[in-house]
Amino acid sequence: MEKIFKKIWFFLKELSGENNYQKYIMNNKKCTHMTQKEFYLKQLNKKWNKINRCC
Image (tube, rainbow, N blue to C red; front, side):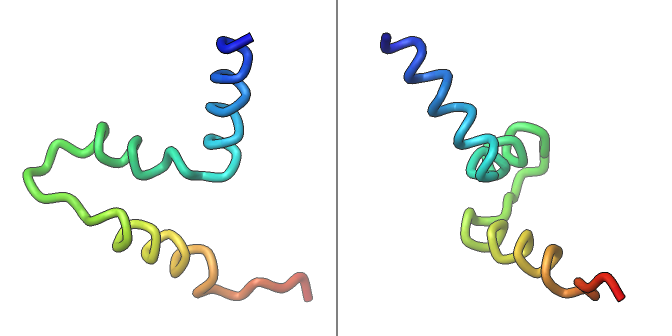
């Protein structure tokens, strides 16, 4: 039962994007990283600072 719960929890974190910061830390080998807040704000700006309409 616990194993199923962990898999569901992992799936939900992936779906919501919560794991993106951890992936960023693991894949960037630079000495200095953005803070979690900076990373989150950059992702929001990247998503919403463009034309978001169909017509």
